[in-house]
Image (cartoon, rainbow, N blue to C red):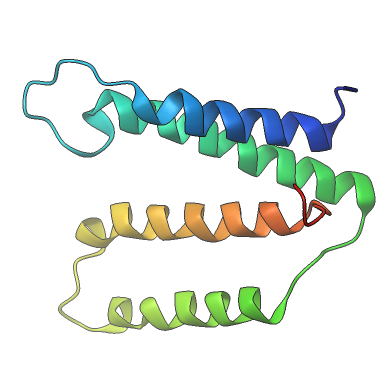
Length: 118
């Protein structure tokens, strides 16, 4: 198997699903990114997003679908409460970054031309 960007994406996704999601360590009752498995998950997700943007720069062609456009429209609709006068931006930031990462991961997945078997 040749180690190109396509295969590197698949290997990283496999390692994330097979190993990265199953690491459990002792916690002291923390939450969010203070949990070890969340930190490890963000490392894998960041790598997958980086591979997607590298593929985008390499192919110089943005691949999208109607579903991705609907997801982006929904993402923008979820930002409307930030315009309210009584909204707290700092309470919204973790959710905002999580949504951004999810949309970017989906966008990165679309940049690779996977076959039906893959």
